[in-house]
Length: 527
Image: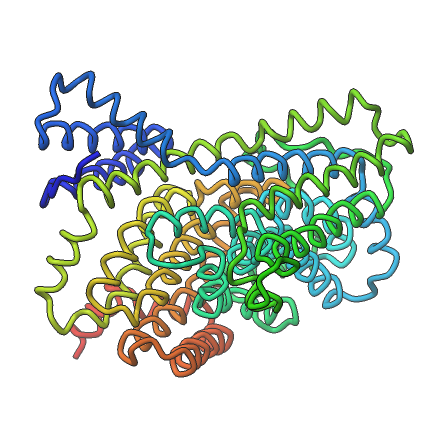
């Protein structure tokens, strides 16, 4: 299809999508309407009549042409593996093992954090597993359910976004590929990890909180109550839908072998698709092979291998019957369908804006008139992604909307900031997903920790805000230094530590009270 320079009209499809998503909280229907609106603008612009019929044709051509089947197959097979592992009771077996060996509150918190980091394969798998496994352990040491939910949530999306062997790597890679700015989408994802300040600083904060001494705001109240009265489990306000059943028995091997197999097969498949064992000597090194690998194809191969391990492990031992295994695999695929639909529509939106309506070129021309404000692009995209993801509750939808716009825009204005701005979009999207009360991972974390949703959101927000402020400082310095990592990371790291120390010494309530407009106005009046 020919290109059409739509000017300011090229902004309408993403704007319509954003506004509808904010109003309806439905990202799928919002993306679909946005794609239809953009297709109509394109058909009218190029004179492709009859407009209603051609609009639908263009929309569906976009949807079909932008599908990455490797991503869809991997996500579906990963859903099957997660469902089957949970159904065998392997996670419960780990819980029983951990309960007998953890001897202190600090050890329980650090073990919970460590388990969350290890479960980097998928955020849903993390949320559904860590709470089930560690809840008996944290209850034993009178750790509040709010803190358990915070640790679960903070080691879900923020960890997956910096894990090369995760479902997120493939999902983000699919959006990166649409920009055409990088030779390898997987290599670009790996290169973005050191720049993903929000994920890294969130991990820093959760480790310090787990170590102890950093309870403030609503979290301190919850912890004091738990120490005085126990965890006082309450039923969650929102039950997660489509989750895997938790079996009462099981063995640790039922969890460790399939997940370990997935990781091992993924590493081998990445090297294989990158030509490590091929005929080209230039690719016979780890760096060269990983830089040229086909991550989507590799993770599909790895997921098939992991399912084969699960089949051999579960069925002959009669942990699951053949019928239960096959039914569980199908049910697991169903749990991933919402993510798949969002991805497909996001790919279509990206192709529409980038290739047909020339949205990135229009934004680049517009920002270019700002002259000296180019240094603020990483910070702007970080804040915009955070706002959009928080309001819509989805990071993957935000990836699909902003990555195809941000990367070409920054590439046209200042190529040295392309990787920084890509990471800023990823980081901001994860912040919104991490903090939003309508995010699926927020809901799953609170539900599987047995913590009311509103309590989880209110206790987590101060810690997420600390990491957000540190990240914003880091991206501002990155823009001012032309994309230098060391000073940018150092500035953000110090800002994060400073905020933590201020809140620990003064308390969340005291800080917010000092910053409140009412207090400031009274102070001015008294002066």
